[in-house]
Image (cartoon, one colour):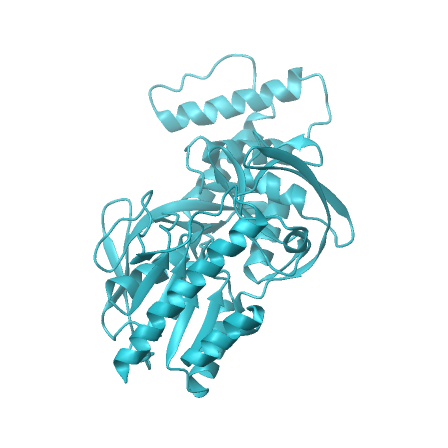
Length: 411
């Protein structure tokens, strides 16, 4: 559920970790039992703490064959966990490799996107036509254990790495849905996440209603590297077909790459107008503005729910604030911070919260979400499959009714 910016290899955090690692290695050889007088400098105290601990592990710990890389990865992970920010996290080389693969839309696993919420991992998006999607795993399901190991104290990266694995192997998730706890065993597969879907994924009755209204339907599942290209293809095909309105579905879209959301918003927002404001730690504001590219001229309606988050909220906010689209559904998730992807020494990586964003009108939606123009349906968490179908059908019908009114007004 991250609105993230591209990696920067020479980041401050990378240099800090290099200093920690170099200092710890030097201290691990020939460092005596006496304490170091570090004075009042906080960084010096921190380096001395790690050096002392490393020395004690190497000279006192019962097991001799401790992997130094594991110690450093643990220190780096603990550093970011100590921030108390669920969106800043360290990834070991294997976890970082998987993270980068997921942004391409192709990876090996069960087909769920997860985030930490209320201290534990929760499914924010089951990918359709994957082992998880076919097994009926839902947004809002809480993952209590992976193959019997409780997730209570696991980092998000560890949960993800335990769920993923070679295609054909099995993994058992212990899930809580409402008041019910159950196990679900899944066979991992090669996942190709189709991030943009058209009306062929809808029920025949919904497709017929769209055709009768002269409207097109595009659903953005996530904002990954292929999404800009795939959305452009789907949108251009809809416009060539003569569609008089667009129903843009962002429900259960947990976000992704910031630049992808900006690129898609640029297809709608008038030239020179703000798409999103980015605010750094010093309060400096950088505004991403629309270019002079061709703009969509037909009416637009956006569908959202409580799992519409991050990059999808950036797009929703841009279309809503500029009165390009009406928003239908329930209040969105409310993730108004962005992360930078860091490439770290040894193949490791991290995401680090580096700023917050404001909608074009200057609204800070973090922890609040975006309220729809028309409330329809309800929240999905804890609902039965039949209840979810009814909620989503109600939302679709409400959105299409609003879109039909807008199409009629353009005639």
